[in-house]
Length: 161
Image (cartoon, one colour):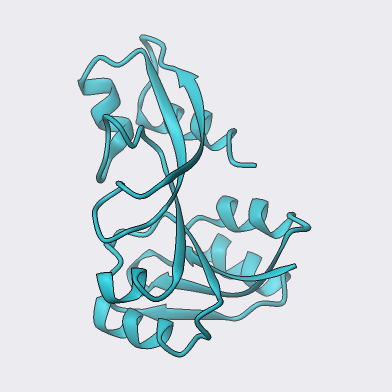
């Protein structure tokens, strides 16, 4: 079983990851301005601790205290991981858009504005570029005429294993 640190603000992502027999979540990291009660409650329920950080400098200091063999799983983090960290550690990210056509923030909104007929939840290994790391797996959904960004997010999150 691999030790893993969850980074992000999604209580759903943390909950689903905690059910895996392949990983042992040892800690949660979250931006101070993104923490909410549902995440706090779940962290407490799972018997974990949470570290809050303001931005990249504080985040980098926290990460550098972990052993090199630790794995970091990210879902809903509004920040690019610095290259000095991606060179040293393994970071994996869930992105609610295609890594080929829809990188960066707000992929659900862009899928709708671009008139796409489908969208993708992508799991990838992070490198120093935005949403351009090695694709590990993806999950596709159809976009219907009446879908909005919240509906797309919920549809895509059904693909989180």
